[in-house]
View 1: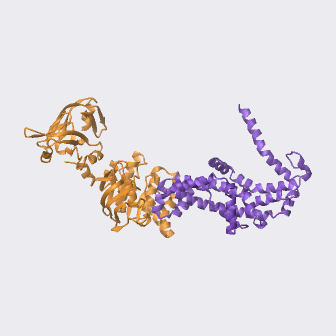
View 2: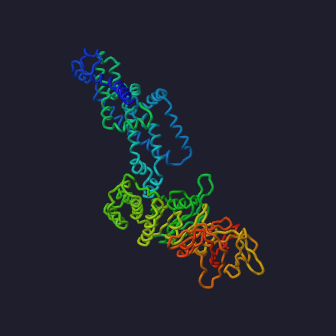
View 3: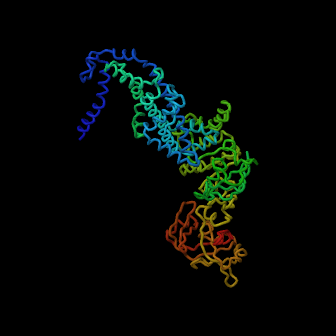
Length: 268
Length: 371
């Protein structure tokens, strides 16, 4: 049975990895070499990449994406920790109802809230600004849920001891409790960051100004909007550039990525 | 240092019954007070109320004459040692001890000085840069105490600090706590369910049950003069023998007849004679400690009662003392034997026991109060 298992797993692994390998090699091939399924680039050149950078402000989009993803992830951690702590450790009327309401919002697909959210952005005058990219994502129910569960699992005595030592609630959360649930923090960070980094639909709706666009948005517009002149190699090169930051992050935090996926039970 | 006063303290959780009903205790300056009772008696809740970790539903709590009901824990000038130590896992021992001082904006020099001094007292200097997970239970325990000491609080609160230690370490730490109390000259309030800890550590002991104070007295008074059946049964190892029966008056003689009439104890000459007159014909419970139920008559001319030869069920001989177990009317009774003699007895020997009648306790069977 054992050899069979290895063969199956190898086939599965190749199935997953090959399109990616092809993507990289195709992006480095000349336009003529794109027809065949190859492992190595045909007529290797970096011309496709040059073209991408000539046509669109990808550097600017990268910085936009980085700023939005990092800043928003920070806000998600802050807000999630505070809400999660209140739901886990404080007693007040309606606490459980609030918690279930927050969980309920997880069941709503993003598409349902898309239009109302867009109208809100228009009314607030936030279209074409970073605010539209950041604020709607600054509190997320998954992070509240994960923080609440993690805080609920810590001993009450830790909080009592800190309170007697003179710590206020914010200090208890951020100086005493958070350092003891770092795996959860990392999970939330990775999931949130990836979700934000890959988000293309929402920016397409609220951002029209090229200087404010995020990478996925710009690459999508570039690929389907005609500016690539139908050159497949250039589109693919743009896609590789889009995936690169997450791949690099994955290489650094591989173990935590896997744990994050396993603990949240979802991938996005 | 300070005195702590609890005046008619009560506690109820939202909408529920009162878990602490009406507790009035006055802890003197520099006293070591122990709150003891079975689990669920409210002792920890009471301690947490003194600490400020639980709201006080009713009554007044005074520390050094100041009402602190609504004062947050950090401003009560107390320090607490928790059962599971509650050390901050991500901080070193030094940081754990310094945390409270840093929040009080104390200078770095003074913090260092205080932490090092406490570490010296507790002999944990080599551990200062370790994290809690790299230490044994006993060491963590010391750090937890150290964290309290550096604060130099008016009142120390201990919540079952020894119950996570093994028996040997618990015995050692008990002695060190006594030393520490003398050394620091501090008011200490200590919660435990272990009556041995209570007896050995407490200047005075509060025995609690179901949110009520059963008795508040010195260890020796609790032992010798329990005010009710609960305290009698709770304090002392082995526990006091309790035998239900009735007081009878026969031919001018006052006797205690056990329920099944196995024993008829003549009380005419005992010190209880006068007090028991009012209970003639009423059910009572006789209490006698093992050391007053022995295999040899008491010296002097104290009155004793010798029971018929009764068979033992088991004998435990520990060398310094020996305990014999027998059953009278379905109730397990324990007697203290001389170890040398016990060594010669078969475990099921029949033996005459001598009951020291001046040391016998009587309790009203209805009210459970001492007579």
